[in-house]
Length: 157
Length: 427
Ligand code: FES
Ligand SMILES: [Fe+2]
Image (cartoon, rainbow over all chains, first blue to last red; front, side):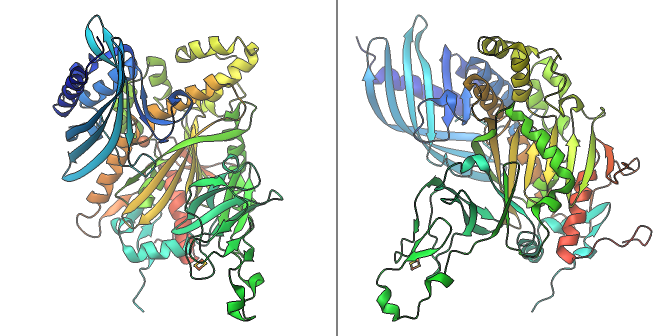
C-alpha cells in the first residue's frame, strides 16, 4: 500500500514539534542514515551538491549542528532562539509503498533577544519506509527570502 | 548648515570614541568622503567573463551596474536613467545587449551610451543624446579584482593597493594553477555599524573565544591549525588603511611546502583526485582547497579572507550588509570545488557554525557602544611590542590591533585630509 498523506503528515508534524521544543537529539533519529537536510540559496537548484547552500547536511553535519545548539558554547545559540512553526498546504506529489514526496508550506516565528522574526518557506520532503518505520530521506527548505540578505539563523528550520 | 562632527576629536592612534558606530552625521560624511573618494571593490572578473555579462551592486549607497562591453572593457555605471532617474536594471546578474529603462524606454548600450529615445521628436531637437550616457565611474582592475571610484583625481588603483599586491597574488594561488572564480555567496545583515565588521577581519583575538562551537565541530588537526593566537603569525600594516593578518604562516604561499603531509580530513578527497592528477598536482589542489593562512584587508570594503571574499556594504549608521563570496578553481576538479563549498557552508553564512556567532558579537558591540558617553573603544592591543619592517611596515603579533589602527588612520585621512599629529604631539 502506498504511503498515505496521513502517515506522512504525522511524521512531519512530529519533526516540527521536536524542533520547536528543542528536542534536537530526538530529531536526529527521524532521518535515514543517508538522509540530507538542505537549505538552498538558489530557488531553482536541484543539484545541491554542486552549488553553495545555506545548509547541506549529511548525518555527520546534522549531529554537529545539534551539538552546537545544545553545547552552550555558541554565543548566538546560548540559548538558541525559540521558535513556533506552522505547517500546512500539504500536497503529496508522488507516493509508492517505498517512498513518497510531499510538499508543504512552513511559517516559522523566531524570538531571540527581544526580536521577533518570521520566515516563510516551501518545504519538500522525501520520506522512505525503513525497518524502523517511516523516515526523512531528504528535506529541502526553500526560504521565500533565500536570495535576500538574511540574519543569523541559529536553530533548525 | 549644521556643524559636522570633527573626526579628529573622535579618534586617537590607540582608541576611538564609541559614537563612531552610531553618529548619523558622521555616517553621511563617511558615505561621501570615504565611499565616493576611494577605490571601492565592486566585482571579481569571473562574475562577468563574457561581453554582455553584467551584475548589479553598490558603491557605498549608490546602485551600479558592472558590465563587460563588446570590446571586453568593464564599465561601472550608476544604475540611474538619465531621463527621470529610474533604475534601468533590477536583475542581480545576467547577459544583455542593452539596458532599456522600463519607465519611458530609453535604451543604453553596454558602455552606457544613450542609443534610443522613444518619440524623440517630442524634444524638437533639444535632446543631445551624446551628453546623456549612464554615468560611468572610473574603473581599474588588479589580478581579477575590479574596483571603481567616483573620484577622477585620486591616484591609480595600482598605487592605492601598493604593498598589498604581492598578498593579493598569494591569495589567488587558491586557484591551484587555474584562475580563481566566484561560486555563490552568503549575504546577511547585522544591526550595527560597518566599521565593526571592518575591524573583525583583522581581529584574530576573538577567534578562539567566539568560534568555540565551530572549533568543537572540527577534527583535532584542524583545531591545532586554527590555534594561532599566541603563535608565530603577525599583523602587518600595508599602508593606505590596508593590512594583512597572517594566522597560519605555513599557509601563506600555497605553492610551497608541497611535500607537507596531507591533512587527515582531506585524505579521501586526495585519494579521489589521485585518479586524475599526478601526486604533485594533487597536493597543490589539496593545499588550495584548505585556503590561505591569512586575511588581507583592503580598505574600506573588501577582505580576502582565508578562503573567500568578505564584502561589506553600509546600509545606515547602524546597519550593515555582509557578503561572504565563495571562490574556487575555474576549470579545476568538481570534487575539489565541492569540497570548498562544503567548507564554506560549514563556517559561513546565516546557518554556518561561525558567522552567526560573529554577527552576535558585532550586534553586542553596537548595543553596548550606546551605553554611556565619552567612553573609549580600545585599539591598543599589541602596541607595546609593535615594530617596523625594513620597508617601513608596522607589525605586531597575530592578535594585535595593528590592522585596526591602520584602517582608522586611513579613515581619519579620508575624513579630514589630514593624518594624526606627528609622534609626541599627542592627539
Ligand atoms: S525614467 Fe528612464 S526613460 Fe524615463
Ligand atoms: Fe569571526
